[in-house]
Amino acid sequence: MLFYFFALLAAAAVVAVANPRSEPNRWAAAFLIFASIGGVADTLYEAGYGAAGHAVQLLNHTITPYGVLLFSIVYSESIRSKKVRLYAKLLLLLPPAATIIAATARQVFEIPYGLLLTWTAPYYLTACFLLLRALWQETDRRRRKSRLIVTVIIVPTVIAVLVFINVANAFIPDFQFFRYISFFILFSLTVALLGSFAIGVLGVKLRFERDPLEEAMKTASSGTTLLNHSIKNEIGKIALSSENLKYSLAESDTVSKQHLQIIANASEHLLQMAERMHSQTKELVLAKQRYQLYELIDRCLLQHKSVLEQAGIAVSVDYAVRPSLLGDPLHVSEALGNVLMNAIEAMPDGGLLTIRLTTEKKIFRLTVHDTGEGILPGEIAQVFQPFYSTKNRGSNFGLGLSYVYNVMRKSGGTAELTSVPGAGTSVALLFPAKLAGAEDGK
Image (cartoon, rainbow, N blue to C red; front, side, top):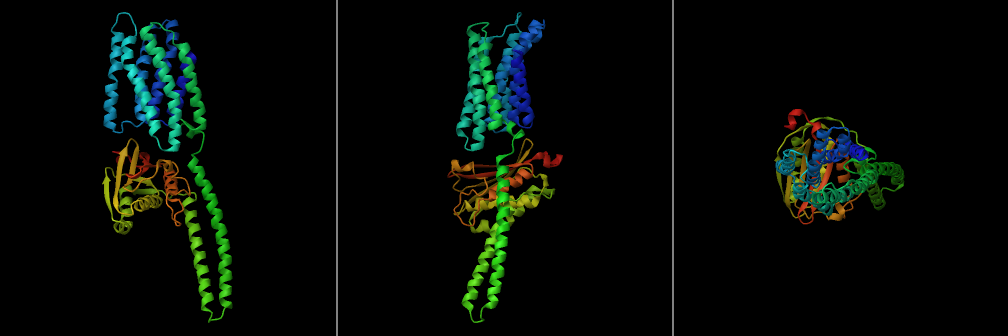
Protein backbone atom coordinates (compact mmCIF):
# COMPACT_ATOMS: atom_id res chain seq x y z
CA MET A 1 0.00 0.00 0.00
CA LEU A 2 2.88 2.39 0.67
CA PHE A 3 4.20 1.72 -2.84
CA TYR A 4 0.77 2.78 -4.10
CA PHE A 5 1.09 6.00 -2.07
CA PHE A 6 4.61 6.93 -3.23
CA ALA A 7 4.00 6.00 -6.88
CA LEU A 8 0.87 8.15 -7.23
CA LEU A 9 2.41 10.96 -5.20
CA ALA A 10 5.46 10.96 -7.51
CA ALA A 11 3.16 11.04 -10.55
CA ALA A 12 1.32 14.04 -9.04
CA ALA A 13 4.63 15.85 -8.49
CA VAL A 14 5.80 15.24 -12.07
CA VAL A 15 2.51 16.47 -13.56
CA ALA A 16 2.47 19.56 -11.35
CA VAL A 17 6.10 20.50 -12.05
CA ALA A 18 5.76 19.88 -15.81
CA ASN A 19 3.36 22.81 -16.21
CA PRO A 20 2.26 24.42 -12.94
CA ARG A 21 0.32 27.15 -14.76
CA SER A 22 -1.89 24.66 -16.58
CA GLU A 23 -5.29 24.14 -14.92
CA PRO A 24 -5.61 20.56 -16.26
CA ASN A 25 -2.21 19.76 -14.75
CA ARG A 26 -3.20 21.21 -11.40
CA TRP A 27 -6.41 19.18 -11.25
CA ALA A 28 -4.56 16.05 -12.38
CA ALA A 29 -2.03 16.57 -9.58
CA ALA A 30 -4.86 17.17 -7.09
CA PHE A 31 -6.79 13.98 -7.80
CA LEU A 32 -3.54 11.95 -7.87
CA ILE A 33 -2.64 13.29 -4.42
CA PHE A 34 -6.04 12.39 -2.95
CA ALA A 35 -5.92 9.01 -4.69
CA SER A 36 -2.45 8.36 -3.24
CA ILE A 37 -3.33 9.08 0.40
CA GLY A 38 -5.53 5.97 0.48
CA GLY A 39 -2.26 4.03 0.52
CA VAL A 40 -1.29 5.30 3.98
CA ALA A 41 -4.62 4.61 5.72
CA ASP A 42 -3.63 1.09 6.88
CA THR A 43 -0.24 2.35 8.08
CA LEU A 44 -1.92 5.05 10.17
CA TYR A 45 -4.35 2.53 11.67
CA GLU A 46 -1.50 0.15 12.56
CA ALA A 47 0.42 3.00 14.20
CA GLY A 48 -2.54 3.82 16.39
CA TYR A 49 -3.63 7.00 14.60
CA GLY A 50 -7.25 5.98 14.05
CA ALA A 51 -8.67 9.49 13.58
CA ALA A 52 -6.03 10.33 10.97
CA GLY A 53 -6.70 7.03 9.23
CA HIS A 54 -10.44 7.78 9.11
CA ALA A 55 -9.81 11.28 7.68
CA VAL A 56 -7.41 10.02 5.02
CA GLN A 57 -9.76 7.22 3.98
CA LEU A 58 -12.75 9.56 3.78
CA LEU A 59 -10.91 12.21 1.72
CA ASN A 60 -9.59 9.50 -0.59
CA HIS A 61 -13.09 8.19 -1.35
CA THR A 62 -14.82 11.58 -1.70
CA ILE A 63 -12.35 14.08 -3.18
CA THR A 64 -10.74 11.73 -5.73
CA PRO A 65 -13.89 11.33 -7.89
CA TYR A 66 -14.52 15.07 -7.60
CA GLY A 67 -10.96 15.78 -8.78
CA VAL A 68 -11.20 13.27 -11.65
CA LEU A 69 -14.41 14.85 -12.95
CA LEU A 70 -13.05 18.40 -12.67
CA PHE A 71 -9.87 17.38 -14.47
CA SER A 72 -11.93 15.84 -17.28
CA ILE A 73 -14.09 18.96 -17.62
CA VAL A 74 -11.08 21.26 -17.82
CA TYR A 75 -8.91 18.99 -19.97
CA SER A 76 -11.68 18.25 -22.47
CA GLU A 77 -12.52 21.99 -22.64
CA SER A 78 -16.20 21.11 -22.19
CA ILE A 79 -16.92 24.34 -20.28
CA ARG A 80 -15.00 27.31 -21.70
CA SER A 81 -16.55 30.06 -19.59
CA LYS A 82 -14.60 30.77 -16.39
CA LYS A 83 -17.74 31.81 -14.54
CA VAL A 84 -19.66 28.68 -15.52
CA ARG A 85 -16.65 26.51 -14.58
CA LEU A 86 -16.57 28.14 -11.14
CA TYR A 87 -20.27 27.44 -10.61
CA ALA A 88 -19.75 23.84 -11.74
CA LYS A 89 -16.88 23.38 -9.29
CA LEU A 90 -18.98 24.64 -6.39
CA LEU A 91 -22.08 22.67 -7.38
CA LEU A 92 -20.18 19.42 -7.91
CA LEU A 93 -18.58 19.80 -4.47
CA LEU A 94 -21.95 19.40 -2.73
CA PRO A 95 -22.19 15.54 -2.94
CA PRO A 96 -18.65 15.01 -1.54
CA ALA A 97 -19.39 17.49 1.26
CA ALA A 98 -22.68 15.74 2.07
CA THR A 99 -20.93 12.36 2.21
CA ILE A 100 -18.21 13.71 4.52
CA ILE A 101 -20.87 15.16 6.84
CA ALA A 102 -22.85 11.88 6.80
CA ALA A 103 -19.73 9.85 7.66
CA THR A 104 -18.52 12.12 10.47
CA ALA A 105 -21.99 12.53 12.02
CA ARG A 106 -22.12 8.85 13.00
CA GLN A 107 -20.98 7.75 16.43
CA VAL A 108 -18.90 4.95 14.90
CA PHE A 109 -16.88 5.90 11.82
CA GLU A 110 -18.11 4.16 8.71
CA ILE A 111 -17.95 5.26 5.08
CA PRO A 112 -21.50 5.29 3.61
CA TYR A 113 -20.69 3.34 0.44
CA GLY A 114 -24.32 3.29 -0.63
CA LEU A 115 -24.54 7.09 -0.57
CA LEU A 116 -21.08 7.31 -2.09
CA LEU A 117 -22.09 5.15 -5.04
CA THR A 118 -25.11 7.33 -5.92
CA TRP A 119 -22.88 10.19 -7.01
CA THR A 120 -19.43 8.66 -7.67
CA ALA A 121 -20.84 6.48 -10.46
CA PRO A 122 -22.20 9.50 -12.42
CA TYR A 123 -18.98 11.44 -11.68
CA TYR A 124 -16.65 8.70 -12.95
CA LEU A 125 -18.80 7.78 -15.95
CA THR A 126 -19.18 11.43 -16.97
CA ALA A 127 -15.42 11.91 -16.69
CA CYS A 128 -14.82 8.93 -18.99
CA PHE A 129 -17.41 10.20 -21.47
CA LEU A 130 -15.84 13.68 -21.61
CA LEU A 131 -12.36 12.29 -22.23
CA LEU A 132 -13.58 9.91 -24.95
CA ARG A 133 -15.63 12.65 -26.62
CA ALA A 134 -12.69 15.07 -26.60
CA LEU A 135 -10.50 12.38 -28.17
CA TRP A 136 -13.11 11.66 -30.85
CA GLN A 137 -13.60 15.35 -31.73
CA GLU A 138 -9.90 16.34 -31.73
CA THR A 139 -8.66 17.19 -35.24
CA ASP A 140 -5.12 18.29 -34.45
CA ARG A 141 -2.87 15.26 -34.93
CA ARG A 142 -0.40 16.10 -32.17
CA ARG A 143 -3.10 16.91 -29.61
CA ARG A 144 -5.04 13.80 -30.60
CA LYS A 145 -2.06 11.59 -29.73
CA SER A 146 -1.73 13.28 -26.35
CA ARG A 147 -5.47 12.93 -25.68
CA LEU A 148 -5.27 9.25 -26.61
CA ILE A 149 -2.56 8.59 -24.03
CA VAL A 150 -4.40 10.53 -21.30
CA THR A 151 -7.63 8.63 -22.08
CA VAL A 152 -5.85 5.25 -21.97
CA ILE A 153 -4.25 6.19 -18.64
CA ILE A 154 -7.43 7.35 -16.93
CA VAL A 155 -10.50 5.60 -18.34
CA PRO A 156 -9.68 1.90 -17.60
CA THR A 157 -8.47 2.69 -14.08
CA VAL A 158 -11.46 4.92 -13.30
CA ILE A 159 -13.86 2.17 -14.41
CA ALA A 160 -11.93 -0.32 -12.28
CA VAL A 161 -12.11 1.98 -9.24
CA LEU A 162 -15.84 2.36 -9.75
CA VAL A 163 -16.40 -1.40 -10.00
CA PHE A 164 -13.92 -2.78 -7.44
CA ILE A 165 -14.15 -0.02 -4.82
CA ASN A 166 -17.46 1.82 -5.02
CA VAL A 167 -19.81 -0.84 -6.38
CA ALA A 168 -18.16 -3.78 -4.59
CA ASN A 169 -18.04 -2.07 -1.18
CA ALA A 170 -21.66 -0.88 -1.52
CA PHE A 171 -22.85 -4.48 -1.83
CA ILE A 172 -20.03 -6.42 -0.11
CA PRO A 173 -18.82 -4.55 3.00
CA ASP A 174 -15.09 -4.80 3.73
CA PHE A 175 -14.41 -5.95 0.16
CA GLN A 176 -10.64 -6.33 -0.32
CA PHE A 177 -10.27 -4.27 -3.45
CA PHE A 178 -6.53 -3.53 -3.52
CA ARG A 179 -5.33 -6.74 -5.14
CA TYR A 180 -7.71 -6.07 -8.03
CA ILE A 181 -7.15 -2.35 -8.37
CA SER A 182 -3.34 -2.54 -8.09
CA PHE A 183 -3.11 -4.05 -11.58
CA PHE A 184 -4.91 -1.07 -13.12
CA ILE A 185 -2.79 1.43 -11.17
CA LEU A 186 0.38 -0.27 -12.41
CA PHE A 187 -1.04 -0.27 -15.95
CA SER A 188 -1.78 3.48 -15.80
CA LEU A 189 1.64 4.35 -14.41
CA THR A 190 3.36 2.25 -17.08
CA VAL A 191 1.36 3.86 -19.91
CA ALA A 192 2.05 7.31 -18.45
CA LEU A 193 5.79 6.62 -18.28
CA LEU A 194 5.98 5.25 -21.82
CA GLY A 195 3.67 7.95 -23.15
CA SER A 196 5.76 10.75 -21.65
CA PHE A 197 8.73 9.58 -23.72
CA ALA A 198 6.91 8.57 -26.90
CA ILE A 199 4.24 11.27 -27.29
CA GLY A 200 3.90 13.46 -24.22
CA VAL A 201 1.44 13.53 -21.33
CA LEU A 202 0.16 16.88 -20.03
CA GLY A 203 3.31 18.63 -21.17
CA VAL A 204 5.70 16.23 -19.43
CA LYS A 205 7.39 15.35 -22.71
CA LEU A 206 8.45 18.94 -23.16
CA ARG A 207 10.92 18.41 -20.34
CA PHE A 208 12.77 15.76 -22.34
CA GLU A 209 12.33 16.55 -26.01
CA ARG A 210 12.35 19.58 -28.26
CA ASP A 211 9.22 20.69 -30.05
CA PRO A 212 9.07 18.79 -33.39
CA LEU A 213 8.08 22.00 -35.20
CA GLU A 214 11.19 23.67 -33.83
CA GLU A 215 13.29 20.90 -35.36
CA ALA A 216 11.42 21.29 -38.65
CA MET A 217 12.11 25.02 -38.68
CA LYS A 218 15.82 24.41 -38.05
CA THR A 219 15.97 21.92 -40.90
CA ALA A 220 14.17 24.34 -43.21
CA SER A 221 16.50 27.16 -42.15
CA SER A 222 19.58 25.08 -42.95
CA GLY A 223 18.16 24.13 -46.34
CA THR A 224 17.18 27.65 -47.37
CA THR A 225 20.54 29.04 -46.19
CA LEU A 226 22.34 26.60 -48.47
CA LEU A 227 19.89 27.30 -51.31
CA ASN A 228 20.28 31.06 -50.92
CA HIS A 229 24.08 30.79 -50.94
CA SER A 230 24.14 28.49 -53.98
CA ILE A 231 21.70 30.62 -55.98
CA LYS A 232 23.69 33.79 -55.26
CA ASN A 233 26.85 32.14 -56.54
CA GLU A 234 25.18 30.87 -59.71
CA ILE A 235 23.39 34.16 -60.39
CA GLY A 236 26.71 35.95 -59.99
CA LYS A 237 28.10 33.81 -62.79
CA ILE A 238 25.04 34.42 -64.96
CA ALA A 239 25.18 38.18 -64.37
CA LEU A 240 28.90 38.37 -65.23
CA SER A 241 28.49 36.26 -68.38
CA SER A 242 25.43 38.26 -69.47
CA GLU A 243 27.26 41.55 -68.98
CA ASN A 244 30.28 40.34 -70.97
CA LEU A 245 28.04 39.02 -73.72
CA LYS A 246 26.12 42.31 -73.89
CA TYR A 247 29.31 44.26 -74.63
CA SER A 248 30.30 41.83 -77.35
CA LEU A 249 27.05 42.32 -79.23
CA ALA A 250 26.60 44.87 -81.95
CA GLU A 251 24.49 47.95 -81.19
CA SER A 252 21.91 46.85 -83.76
CA ASP A 253 21.41 43.40 -82.22
CA THR A 254 18.41 44.43 -80.10
CA VAL A 255 16.80 40.97 -80.12
CA SER A 256 19.79 39.34 -78.39
CA LYS A 257 19.92 42.17 -75.87
CA GLN A 258 16.23 41.66 -75.10
CA HIS A 259 16.88 37.97 -74.42
CA LEU A 260 19.77 38.89 -72.14
CA GLN A 261 17.49 41.24 -70.25
CA ILE A 262 14.97 38.42 -69.81
CA ILE A 263 17.74 36.23 -68.38
CA ALA A 264 18.79 39.02 -66.01
CA ASN A 265 15.19 39.61 -64.84
CA ALA A 266 14.56 35.89 -64.29
CA SER A 267 17.81 35.57 -62.33
CA GLU A 268 16.88 38.52 -60.11
CA HIS A 269 13.42 37.03 -59.50
CA LEU A 270 14.97 33.70 -58.56
CA LEU A 271 17.30 35.44 -56.11
CA GLN A 272 14.39 37.33 -54.51
CA MET A 273 12.45 34.09 -54.03
CA ALA A 274 15.43 32.41 -52.34
CA GLU A 275 15.93 35.41 -50.06
CA ARG A 276 12.21 35.42 -49.14
CA MET A 277 12.35 31.75 -48.19
CA HIS A 278 15.53 32.26 -46.19
CA SER A 279 14.20 35.33 -44.34
CA GLN A 280 11.10 33.44 -43.18
CA THR A 281 12.90 30.31 -41.97
CA LYS A 282 16.15 31.64 -40.51
CA GLU A 283 16.69 31.66 -36.76
CA LEU A 284 15.07 34.80 -35.41
CA VAL A 285 16.87 37.30 -33.23
CA LEU A 286 14.33 39.48 -31.44
CA ALA A 287 15.02 43.14 -30.69
CA LYS A 288 12.80 43.43 -27.63
CA GLN A 289 11.07 46.64 -26.67
CA ARG A 290 7.77 47.59 -25.09
CA TYR A 291 4.87 48.13 -27.46
CA GLN A 292 1.08 48.42 -27.39
CA LEU A 293 -0.41 45.32 -29.01
CA TYR A 294 -3.68 47.01 -30.03
CA GLU A 295 -1.74 49.84 -31.73
CA LEU A 296 0.31 47.28 -33.63
CA ILE A 297 -2.94 45.61 -34.81
CA ASP A 298 -4.36 48.98 -35.93
CA ARG A 299 -1.21 49.77 -37.94
CA CYS A 300 -1.25 46.34 -39.54
CA LEU A 301 -4.91 46.74 -40.54
CA LEU A 302 -4.14 50.17 -41.99
CA GLN A 303 -1.37 48.69 -44.13
CA HIS A 304 -3.81 46.12 -45.51
CA LYS A 305 -6.75 48.51 -45.83
CA SER A 306 -6.66 48.82 -49.62
CA VAL A 307 -6.36 45.04 -50.11
CA LEU A 308 -9.28 44.44 -47.74
CA GLU A 309 -11.45 47.02 -49.52
CA GLN A 310 -10.64 45.62 -52.98
CA ALA A 311 -11.58 42.13 -51.78
CA GLY A 312 -14.88 43.40 -50.34
CA ILE A 313 -13.98 42.29 -46.81
CA ALA A 314 -15.55 44.02 -43.80
CA VAL A 315 -13.50 44.25 -40.61
CA SER A 316 -14.76 43.94 -37.03
CA VAL A 317 -12.36 44.78 -34.20
CA ASP A 318 -12.95 44.15 -30.50
CA TYR A 319 -10.32 45.01 -27.87
CA ALA A 320 -11.47 43.67 -24.52
CA VAL A 321 -7.97 44.38 -23.20
CA ARG A 322 -5.14 46.65 -24.35
CA PRO A 323 -1.89 45.17 -23.05
CA SER A 324 1.56 46.67 -23.31
CA LEU A 325 3.94 43.82 -24.13
CA LEU A 326 7.68 43.29 -24.18
CA GLY A 327 8.80 41.83 -27.50
CA ASP A 328 9.82 42.55 -31.08
CA PRO A 329 7.00 44.59 -32.68
CA LEU A 330 8.50 44.27 -36.18
CA HIS A 331 8.42 40.47 -36.17
CA VAL A 332 5.02 40.35 -34.44
CA SER A 333 3.65 42.80 -37.03
CA GLU A 334 5.06 40.70 -39.88
CA ALA A 335 3.55 37.55 -38.36
CA LEU A 336 0.14 39.22 -38.01
CA GLY A 337 0.46 40.44 -41.60
CA ASN A 338 0.92 36.85 -42.75
CA VAL A 339 -2.20 35.80 -40.83
CA LEU A 340 -4.20 38.66 -42.36
CA MET A 341 -3.06 37.81 -45.90
CA ASN A 342 -4.07 34.18 -45.37
CA ALA A 343 -7.50 35.36 -44.19
CA ILE A 344 -7.87 37.70 -47.18
CA GLU A 345 -6.92 34.94 -49.63
CA ALA A 346 -9.47 32.65 -47.96
CA MET A 347 -12.27 35.13 -48.82
CA PRO A 348 -11.87 35.87 -52.56
CA ASP A 349 -15.56 36.79 -52.82
CA GLY A 350 -15.60 39.00 -49.76
CA GLY A 351 -16.60 38.26 -46.18
CA LEU A 352 -16.05 39.34 -42.60
CA LEU A 353 -12.70 39.53 -40.83
CA THR A 354 -13.09 39.54 -37.04
CA ILE A 355 -10.21 40.48 -34.78
CA ARG A 356 -10.52 40.07 -31.03
CA LEU A 357 -8.01 40.82 -28.29
CA THR A 358 -9.05 39.10 -25.06
CA THR A 359 -7.48 37.90 -21.85
CA GLU A 360 -7.56 34.51 -20.19
CA LYS A 361 -5.74 33.28 -17.12
CA LYS A 362 -2.15 34.50 -17.61
CA ILE A 363 -2.62 34.75 -21.40
CA PHE A 364 -3.51 37.47 -23.89
CA ARG A 365 -5.26 35.99 -26.93
CA LEU A 366 -5.26 37.73 -30.31
CA THR A 367 -7.78 35.93 -32.54
CA VAL A 368 -8.18 36.50 -36.28
CA HIS A 369 -11.28 34.83 -37.73
CA ASP A 370 -12.29 34.75 -41.39
CA THR A 371 -15.52 33.57 -42.97
CA GLY A 372 -13.78 31.72 -45.79
CA GLU A 373 -14.21 28.16 -46.94
CA GLY A 374 -12.18 26.74 -44.03
CA ILE A 375 -9.55 24.00 -43.94
CA LEU A 376 -10.18 20.28 -44.10
CA PRO A 377 -9.64 18.42 -40.77
CA GLY A 378 -6.83 16.31 -42.24
CA GLU A 379 -4.84 19.42 -43.17
CA ILE A 380 -5.07 21.33 -39.89
CA ALA A 381 -2.30 19.33 -38.20
CA GLN A 382 0.17 20.30 -40.95
CA VAL A 383 -0.50 24.02 -41.45
CA PHE A 384 2.44 25.16 -39.30
CA GLN A 385 4.89 22.81 -41.05
CA PRO A 386 7.46 24.56 -43.28
CA PHE A 387 6.66 24.43 -47.03
CA TYR A 388 3.16 23.07 -46.46
CA SER A 389 0.40 25.05 -48.15
CA THR A 390 -3.28 24.51 -48.91
CA LYS A 391 -2.99 26.95 -51.81
CA ASN A 392 -1.97 25.97 -55.34
CA ARG A 393 -0.02 29.09 -56.22
CA GLY A 394 3.52 29.24 -57.52
CA SER A 395 4.30 32.34 -55.45
CA ASN A 396 3.28 30.62 -52.21
CA PHE A 397 6.02 28.68 -50.43
CA GLY A 398 3.98 27.50 -47.44
CA LEU A 399 6.16 29.49 -45.04
CA GLY A 400 3.69 32.12 -43.78
CA LEU A 401 2.27 30.17 -40.84
CA SER A 402 5.63 28.53 -40.12
CA TYR A 403 7.05 32.03 -39.70
CA VAL A 404 4.09 32.96 -37.46
CA TYR A 405 4.75 29.90 -35.30
CA ASN A 406 8.47 30.72 -35.16
CA VAL A 407 7.84 34.33 -34.08
CA MET A 408 5.36 33.33 -31.37
CA ARG A 409 7.64 30.56 -30.06
CA LYS A 410 10.56 32.99 -29.86
CA SER A 411 8.30 35.54 -28.15
CA GLY A 412 7.46 33.02 -25.41
CA GLY A 413 3.95 32.33 -26.67
CA THR A 414 2.36 30.02 -29.21
CA ALA A 415 -0.03 29.96 -32.18
CA GLU A 416 -3.18 27.89 -32.62
CA LEU A 417 -5.43 27.27 -35.61
CA THR A 418 -8.98 25.97 -35.66
CA SER A 419 -11.19 25.64 -38.71
CA VAL A 420 -14.60 24.37 -39.76
CA PRO A 421 -15.07 23.67 -43.48
CA GLY A 422 -17.63 26.11 -44.82
CA ALA A 423 -17.60 28.23 -41.64
CA GLY A 424 -14.14 29.81 -41.71
CA THR A 425 -10.82 29.66 -39.91
CA SER A 426 -9.53 31.17 -36.65
CA VAL A 427 -5.86 31.77 -35.94
CA ALA A 428 -5.00 32.67 -32.34
CA LEU A 429 -1.73 34.24 -31.23
CA LEU A 430 -1.22 33.60 -27.51
CA PHE A 431 1.02 35.96 -25.55
CA PRO A 432 1.90 35.04 -21.94
CA ALA A 433 0.80 37.72 -19.48
CA LYS A 434 4.31 37.78 -18.01
CA LEU A 435 5.33 39.85 -21.08
CA ALA A 436 3.06 42.64 -19.82
CA GLY A 437 3.31 44.94 -16.87
CA ALA A 438 1.23 44.13 -13.78
CA GLU A 439 -1.23 46.90 -14.63
CA ASP A 440 -1.97 45.32 -18.02
CA GLY A 441 -3.19 42.07 -16.59
CA LYS A 442 -6.11 43.72 -14.84
